[in-house]
Length: 277
Image 1 (cartoon, rainbow, N blue to C red):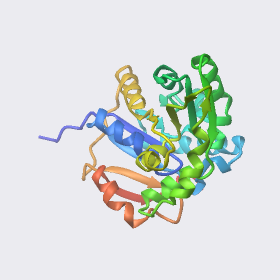
Image 2 (spheres, helix red, strand yellow):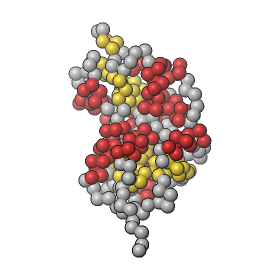
Image 3 (cartoon, rainbow, N blue to C red):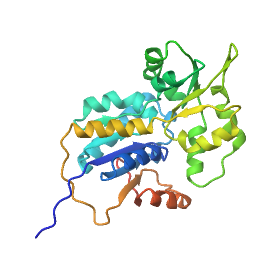
Image 4 (spheres, rainbow, N blue to C red):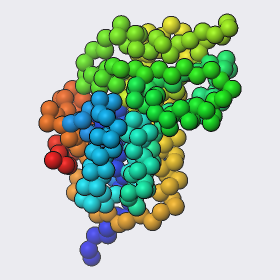
């Protein structure tokens, strides 16, 4: 008797680097039977260095090739900058459903007890109209500090590669997110980059006082599960090894120090793929 073809969702998880692994981790816990293809667009990291039009053109070209080649059931953009700039365009351009990543501003507004919270993201993310509209829509009664951290994603990438994080630079990067107003202090920080949860333990260590860091990854996983339940799933043959894949676009590769972490997350097949020339 011929072996049965496994019927499982195939999910692309996409980020400019390795920070989206925080989202992948939650997705894998929520949907353990799915097949995952993690794309790290390291050739263009960090996305904040690209002009808006340049990034949009790149993402449309990347996903045009990826969707044709991989035939995913759903794509998760595990990158705040890419989501705030390109999510609407990707949804308009492709039939495959897309799940985006945005700062958990609504959650922060609900959780703050002092009425002071911050959005800590890349300079590009905190400046986008999409992000500012979320603040206006959900946090009108709060005082919100928008902080664009220039080097925080880079520090997270170094951390993932096994390098020691410069705690003085980390302290400098997060310091503007800690505000005082009328005897009250910031008590919540919405993380606006999927890289940042990797540094939360160190941020607690160097912070001037204790705050709640709000990571949207769990909510992204739940939304992905909901959307998949509303769409038919293609039949995908299981890979011979059963391993999920990580593809990176940059020619410099992924540091050897991160291999144990990737293996623990089930990413056993790691390789370079230019995807687009």
